Image (cartoon, rainbow, N blue to C red):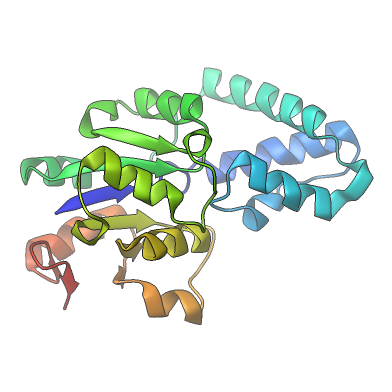
Length: 224
């Protein structure tokens, strides 16, 4: 069985850093603290998120200025701080590698950002490759990123578990034909999502525990 990992909010606690960055950028550009837009754009790539920002702020929104100030904040933050790691990441990665599972990343973030965080966390070598937001036409919740990740793995979607924290990501994985597993971050599942996920765990180490105990069946892709 293969595993596909989302990045922001799943492997790394970066969504909360984005909230700070967008609060900063919003104040700099005169639209006010805009960190709450992280919740409105979870799982989306830059192009799709732009439409949501434009709808929210109208003519007051200047994409280039917001991106510039966000980038300034993030570059300073990550120059002074390592990428924040979500609980259980290394434990799960080591366990899956010990089982000879193949792993890939499916992130709406651009490729340069994905690679930067993977390097910072020293986890690049765990993954066969990464499907990134600037590599596909349609953002999550469309299935494109997960289908690309399956292509990178050389596996059928039915043979892939997908680890996600956002509604858009879980829908994308489900629509691609993968087996979605949720580890909530900023958002808790609603009724629609609970119908499509295979399981929900509190952190990544709990996924490892479920595999060890057989609650999550690696061969059959079932949850008991």
